Length: 313
Image 1 (spheres, one colour):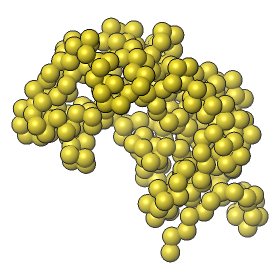
Image 2 (image 1 turned 45 degrees about the vertical axis):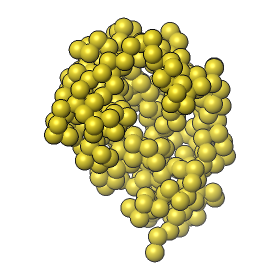
Image 3 (image 1 turned 30 degrees about the horizontal axis):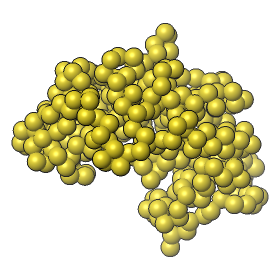
Image 4 (image 1 turned 90 degrees about the vertical axis):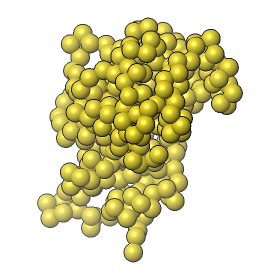
C-alpha cells in the first residue's frame, strides 16, 4: 500500500527517536520534482540513502515519488501556510522557483512567489537552504534571467544559511530540438555557430545540490556550476548527430526573425527571452567570477544529449 502523507499538522511525539530527536530532521524537502532539476535533486538524495519530502501542487503527480518512499507535501508556492508546513522539520531544503519563459512585464508572478516562499522559509527556518539560480544572476541588464536575480535578492537577507547555485545553460535545453533533429535539422539561436557558452547537465546539478545540502556554512553563499567544457551551437548539432546516428544540419535563425518566430509559437512577451540569448551570444551573460566558488560537473555534452535522446526521442 502506498501512503501519501500530506504535511498539514504538528508532528506526533511518537515520530521522535530514542534520543528524542525528530526523525524528520534527517529528511530533505525538495521543490520542483515534476521537472527535470527537482527530479535530479530528489533522485540524488535518495541514491545517497536520504529521506526526501517532495513538495508538489498536485498529489496525482506525486504517486511515483510515494512509491519510492518519499513523503509528500502539497503546497503552491504562493500559499505561505502550506509552504511553511512543507519546509518545516527538515534537515535542509531545495528551493526551485518555477521558470516562466514568457513573463509579464515586471515579472509579477516571480514577485508574488518570492514573497510567499521567503515568508515560508523565515517561518519554517530549515537549517540550510539551496536555491537554484543561474549564470548571469548578477547582471542588471534586462533579460529573462532577471527573475532569478530577483529571487536571490529576496532570499539573500534571510537569517539562514542559503546557497545560491548559479547553474549554466542546461544541456537538456536541446530537448526543444529533438523533433527537428529527428528530421536531420536544427535551428540555431546561439550565435555565431562556433561561439561556446557555459553549459551543465541536469544530473550534475542534482548531484551538486545534494552535495551542498550535506555541507555546513553560514549566511548567504554563491556557487557557480558548469560542465567540463564550454560548447557551441555547432557542437550541439554534432552531439545530436551522434545520438541519432544521422547528420543534423544547423540552420542559424537570423535575429531579425526571432520575435515573429517566438510569437508564432505562442509567446506574448518574447523580448526577455531574446535579451537573454543576446546576453549569451554577446558575452555579457557569463559567470560573475571575482573569487566566487566555481565547480564543474563531469558530464559532457555528448553524453547528456545521448541520454536525452534515449529518454525522450
